Amino acid sequence: MPVSLKTEDPADTRLAVIAEALYLANLLLIPGLGFLILLGLYWKRHAGAGPVGRCHLEQTVTASLWGGFLLVVINGLIILLGGYDGAWTWLIVILYFTMVHSTFILLGMIGLIKAMAGQCWKYPLVGHRLPVEA
Image 1: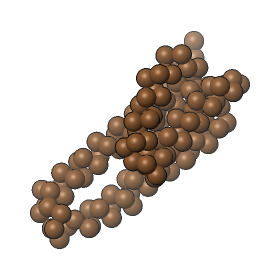
Image 2: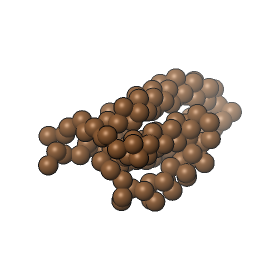
Image 3: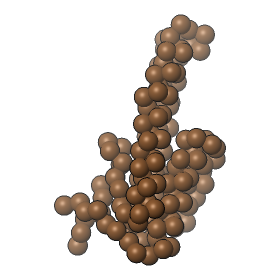
């Protein structure tokens, strides 16, 4: 049964906050670069991280991959419906940013709040399972 793990380790909490901040930076400030930094942090710190830091690293990388996948699908849809000069382009772009992108941002904000509280949290639909209590 999944549990909402909590940590008192400040280093573990700091790692979780950094992961969530990089996830949001990827979505809002530095797309692509934020993801590459997040991946580097994941590869470097995942194995030795505490349960909360590991949880947030896994969640943010998975959500970022899903976001990138959906962006590729949306671009494919735009191309199939007439390219970037087509009549449907702006409708698709506005719907994507209004519904999908803003949802990922909202989930990232909730994840950041949970990370600052030192708690594990699962992204709905796109997240990994939470650790199981031993």
